[in-house]
Length: 327
Image (tube, rainbow, N blue to C red; front, side):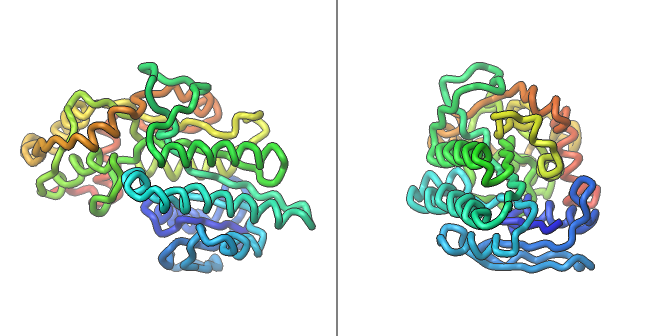
């Protein structure tokens, strides 16, 4: 099986690549080659599997055709700019998040005109496709009402993925990721970044700013769960999906206050004391329109699994990023 990972230099992309190379398989199929693409050259661990790393910009029309020229059997499409950046730079958001995805879908369609080429395409969407008015718990068939440019771009891509799959150009599955926490590294431009920051920084003995109220409730999964979602989607029998090609992934609903309580249980009151409340009306306004909890009934029935407590999410971060030790 030839595998292509677009967005391979990102946090989830790096973890996905490491898992692919560690196992050498996707489901029951052996990986014969791995191509990695991002705007910077992705770095892969040493492996016996042939790996090609490319620095490319998917928003440039001809790039997608180059990426699928070798006819990858499986494509993971993770490339995107995050919510805060997409809101701040309207043109960049649409160029990368929407046009880049459309270029990829078109490249697959055109590559299949002279053959039976129809790759499995796993696309990372977002719960940002939903916006107010919202029920307390969102079902699998709730209407898309995005309130950000990022959410709108992801919603359009979901429709394109479903239509290109219906026409037989790709065998697509879109997975709406919860907010991923706790993210390693430094802060990014995502409006949701503080959800990780109020855990990550205190665990490192550093101060963290909290821009919203403790009552804010949100939907979470760990990076480890995100990789599991991607791999499960890659091996899933998509005949079970019918026309519903985009799925909300399982997650954990928690308030900011519950996050902080979990941090205290895991790391003690000294860690919690490093959180400083610093209200930010812009971030609070964006987050206020986001969904808080989902049923994810279909995804669960298909075998997708998330975490059951925020304590577990914090412990996964400590195990995977801190070697099991905290400051």
